[in-house]
Image 1: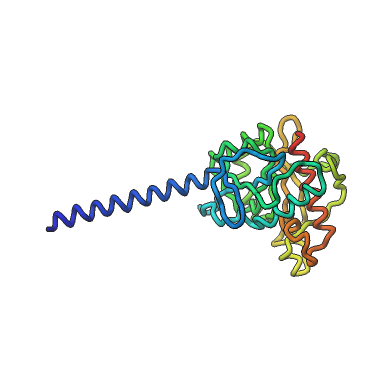
Image 2: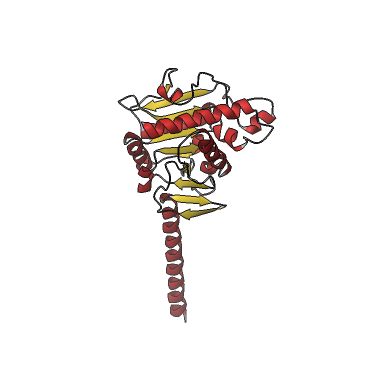
Length: 270
């Protein structure tokens, strides 16, 4: 009787381990594959681009080992892209995808090379391992463009740099020069005001934490092409999302659209 119970217990343990391994494999696949977001659900996407421009949001794991689902990467999703895609259609001749569709993609998905423009939010909390950093580096050096947004202050800058130095350990981050083409490719962006999140505005300020001064910074390739547009101490995604909210100032929303449209046009032509 004891031997039979022992065999039964061993079989149950093997079954539990097998189920756990299956769950981990499924999670790993989910984090590595491209995702298409529609409504309130995520779905695997092997789709190729069907328009000139898709809003493509980068999925990443949070610092501290948190998994990508329901993480910092999805802040303002899907309202930010819904409003921004409307703006692209209204302000440009770029053929944008349906405003109700955003594409969410991980760095290990080969489909990333089908999209010239990536958006990453809350990057003060992102974590890229060596493999992901190498993939992002390859994507950018092959012509891709990354826009990062909605991170504030010195602590989140350090969090951003922890992964960014793995992507480009040998390339400096510099302030985007006033005469850079990205600031003039469609709109002349000579005006620089801080573009805040709506929560900061509710407290009567335009900054979060110690991020009082806005910065427009970038990483360039060997030919002087901007690869990474860094919007530090700003929240362009909130400005898009609340474009029709009377609590959010119209001049800030308008500037947020102009910056992002310039990034988009630049990404698609360089």
